[in-house]
Length: 83
Image 1 (tube, rainbow, N blue to C red):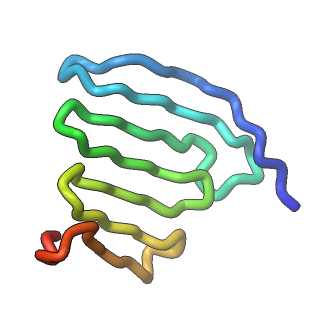
Image 2 (cartoon, rainbow, N blue to C red):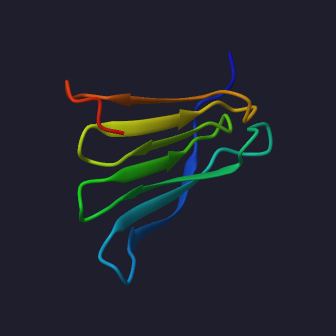
Protein backbone atom coordinates (compact mmCIF):
# COMPACT_ATOMS: atom_id res chain seq x y z
CA UNK A 1 0.00 0.00 0.00
CA UNK A 2 1.22 3.51 -0.69
CA UNK A 3 2.31 5.69 2.16
CA UNK A 4 -0.56 7.98 3.17
CA UNK A 5 1.58 10.38 5.19
CA UNK A 6 1.87 14.03 4.24
CA UNK A 7 3.40 17.27 5.40
CA UNK A 8 1.31 20.41 5.80
CA UNK A 9 3.14 23.10 3.86
CA UNK A 10 0.78 25.98 4.63
CA UNK A 11 -2.51 26.62 6.33
CA UNK A 12 -4.46 29.70 7.24
CA UNK A 13 -7.04 32.12 5.98
CA UNK A 14 -6.96 34.04 2.71
CA UNK A 15 -8.03 37.64 2.06
CA UNK A 16 -11.64 36.54 1.52
CA UNK A 17 -11.75 34.87 4.94
CA UNK A 18 -11.71 31.33 3.57
CA UNK A 19 -9.70 28.58 5.29
CA UNK A 20 -7.08 26.71 3.29
CA UNK A 21 -4.64 23.89 3.89
CA UNK A 22 -1.90 22.83 1.45
CA UNK A 23 -0.38 19.36 1.89
CA UNK A 24 2.69 17.74 0.35
CA UNK A 25 2.30 13.98 -0.20
CA UNK A 26 5.79 13.50 -1.62
CA UNK A 27 7.24 12.50 -4.95
CA UNK A 28 5.22 9.28 -5.33
CA UNK A 29 1.84 11.05 -5.32
CA UNK A 30 0.29 12.01 -8.68
CA UNK A 31 -0.60 15.40 -7.17
CA UNK A 32 2.22 16.16 -4.76
CA UNK A 33 0.78 19.43 -3.51
CA UNK A 34 -2.84 18.81 -2.73
CA UNK A 35 -5.03 21.31 -0.91
CA UNK A 36 -8.49 22.09 0.31
CA UNK A 37 -10.50 25.25 0.84
CA UNK A 38 -13.42 25.74 3.20
CA UNK A 39 -15.29 28.87 2.20
CA UNK A 40 -17.40 31.23 4.25
CA UNK A 41 -20.46 30.51 2.12
CA UNK A 42 -20.37 26.85 3.21
CA UNK A 43 -18.79 25.54 0.02
CA UNK A 44 -15.56 23.58 -0.03
CA UNK A 45 -13.07 22.28 -2.57
CA UNK A 46 -10.53 19.47 -2.45
CA UNK A 47 -7.65 18.83 -4.83
CA UNK A 48 -6.56 15.36 -3.71
CA UNK A 49 -3.20 13.62 -3.75
CA UNK A 50 -4.44 11.03 -6.27
CA UNK A 51 -5.27 13.77 -8.79
CA UNK A 52 -9.03 13.76 -8.20
CA UNK A 53 -10.99 16.91 -7.38
CA UNK A 54 -14.16 17.42 -5.38
CA UNK A 55 -16.33 20.51 -5.02
CA UNK A 56 -19.38 20.94 -2.80
CA UNK A 57 -21.38 24.14 -3.14
CA UNK A 58 -22.66 23.98 0.45
CA UNK A 59 -26.26 23.84 -0.73
CA UNK A 60 -26.59 20.20 -1.71
CA UNK A 61 -24.76 20.27 -5.04
CA UNK A 62 -21.41 18.63 -5.65
CA UNK A 63 -19.03 17.68 -8.41
CA UNK A 64 -16.31 15.03 -8.51
CA UNK A 65 -13.59 14.80 -11.14
CA UNK A 66 -11.72 11.51 -11.40
CA UNK A 67 -7.91 11.46 -11.32
CA UNK A 68 -7.60 10.95 -15.05
CA UNK A 69 -9.93 13.84 -15.76
CA UNK A 70 -12.05 11.53 -17.90
CA UNK A 71 -14.84 10.98 -15.45
CA UNK A 72 -16.90 13.35 -13.42
CA UNK A 73 -20.17 13.37 -11.62
CA UNK A 74 -22.46 15.69 -9.82
CA UNK A 75 -25.00 14.99 -7.18
CA UNK A 76 -27.36 16.51 -4.74
CA UNK A 77 -28.41 15.95 -1.18
CA UNK A 78 -31.80 17.43 -1.93
CA UNK A 79 -34.85 16.01 -3.63
CA UNK A 80 -35.00 18.98 -5.97
CA UNK A 81 -31.89 17.82 -7.82
CA UNK A 82 -30.13 21.16 -7.39
CA UNK A 83 -26.72 21.17 -9.06
